[in-house]
Image (tube, rainbow, N blue to C red; front, side, top):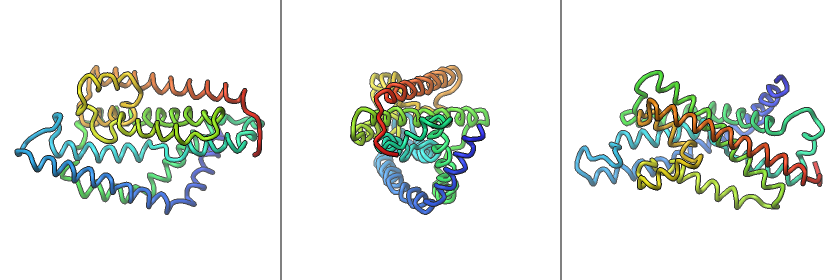
Amino acid sequence: MKKYWHVINIGIQNNLTYRVNFLFRAVFGFIPLLATIFLWRAIYAGKPAGTEVAAYSLAQMTSYYLLVTVVDALTAVNEDDWQIAADIKDGNISQFLLKPIDYLNYRLCLYFSSRIIYLAVAALPLSFFIFSFRSYFIPPADLATFGWFMVSVIMTGLLQFFSSYAMAMLAFWVLEVSTFIFILFAFEYIASGHLFPLNILPPVLERVLYFTPFPYQMYFPISIYMGRTSGEPMLEGLLIQAFWVIATYAIARYAWFRGIKKYSAVGG
């Protein structure tokens, strides 16, 4: 474990070099969020007072998007998949085949370190943004709800990382993986609840999505926080989310195992 703590420490130091970049990314990331919030305010303004859309009031809808920002800051995989694919393509993984260090665990440590620095840099603008919309922000019902929300968020982060890692493993077979990464990102953005709450969709389509890992990458933890998923359905959802974490981890391991057999060092 000591070597992986060292990797986290190195990752933190490397990410501190780009702290201004993280700050600008966080600040300008609020622009599309602001546009979305004002769009929904305009939609509600054109309806009678007290109107709900998919059982969301204006305050609840605004709170939903604020929570999307928080969960995204805690769990987003920014450039890890690109870096992993580049390591494979450029032959940089050769050094990991000769050293007593697991590449997946190495990348997971770097992912954690990047989240630590991003949160440290984005904490102030994120807090200011939430404070500006504090009248719309809905707190969790109780401490237990917040605790289960955090458990789900941790699994969300692992699920996002293992999914991205598995996708990056395609670099063993194809020269350029950017198209696949963009397709996955675009589908995830819609199907995970980034763009809108999934219960806005027709019930049949929403049920179909729950057979995929995507709702558990954003919508599910937020639904726990907002009290829309509780009791037995929440526990079932957490078990399903844990299943997808294990499944994507297994796929990532299997893809690495098969890819290494095909890999031939061309650099590094």
